[in-house]
Length: 202
Image (cartoon, rainbow, N blue to C red):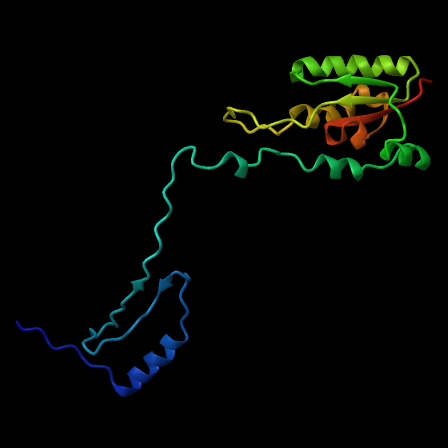
């Protein structure tokens, strides 16, 4: 049995379709959702023609293709900013002289080359001993750290000791001995060292 020819749109239907189609916006910016009626449209609806724009291919990716300099492993906020926002516990004159490098540390501890497991007990002993000796200002040198030659699967902050030392000083038992921690002046190591101002023993 021969098929009946499709019904053509009337002028009123065509005008209505044009009005609706002009008000439609695509759901995706990268798709051209052009919908056009055809004269040989089936009675039950209008054939829609959707033409997708050809998207640019993704760039080739190879393991290890990212440059090491473009990846930051510093997971913590800036230590300089964080320390500068902490409340000042010493008097203003002492704080100003300390920031300008005018106060000479009475003792110093160099943690260069130590692991976390080695550095933590050494720092604890140094700070508590310095307080027992009646010292007020000591210098703890951590270094700024460097990018590891072979980074592991878990990112580590650059300068792990530089990040850990302020945290250790803020936890017991050292927090009972420490009055204030601040980044050292350039003449005493700058961002690779800390001034640790100790409390007086009661």
